[in-house]
Length: 149
Image (cartoon, rainbow, N blue to C red; front, side):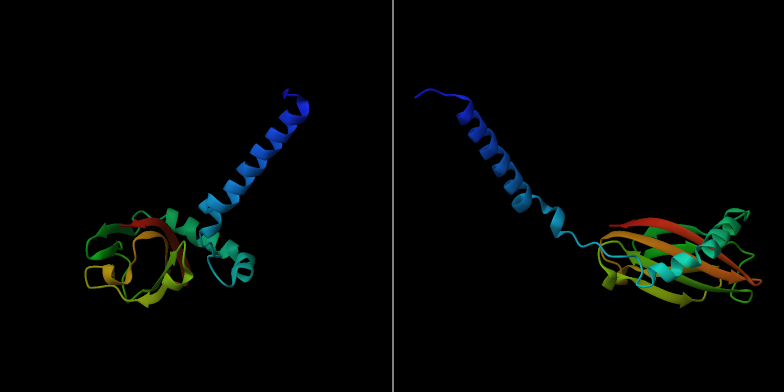
């Protein structure tokens, strides 16, 4: 039996079909869970200029909040001029893969201007921490990408 161009086309198509089927059944891309950061995505997008202004205002501060990862949890330190008497605080901790692991909370600073998100509420993986505060009728926001181990 001679090998001719018809056999070549058949072999090429067979290899191509096997390749496509292997991509469908063995490639794990479709098994990852991806969710929107928030349920009200479009409504929040309409007022995004306020977020931009809050971030720019934060960037102009001489001292900015500082975040450290410790075994006790996520440790947040605020500058001394920002305190419970002149500001209101909240944070949004968004879990990239699972909306059920998001944490949203208002909080008060400790006397040393710190706050800790306890390790017991965190699950290993990546988070986005949106730290927001309102001081002197102005909003401030700082975002941090966090890899909790």
